[in-house]
Image: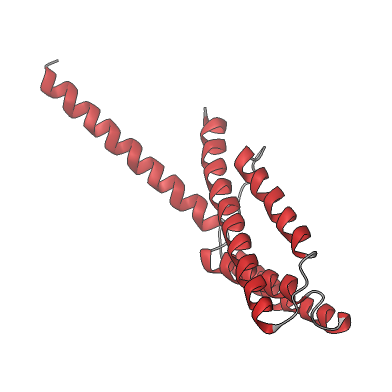
Length: 154
């Protein structure tokens, strides 16, 4: 076997591995919630947490009903997507994002804004934190599903 044949076989193998990785990533992304759902879920959570302590408590509980159409939409959307395989374990980054999400939700309860500008600032801060943490959780779940699929196939 000549050097040129070896190099061409290595490049073909690399191309095949890249194609397999892209296919696995696309398959795992299809089973996860879409990115726009993560944004909408972050917005609904940020609205609810930023209004805590600002509006009457009865009205705040009614604001929790914003999760009902979001959950229904997720259920309908989920039925059209392939069923995802439950990962055996989550990565450390995923668990740190979960802890960050819970910490942000708990800390936000201590900040009760006094005016509309502070409510908007709390909303923007919570939206950024929730969006980043949910995006990290989505990305790590996809990565973990690909890795878990490779482990199970071996």
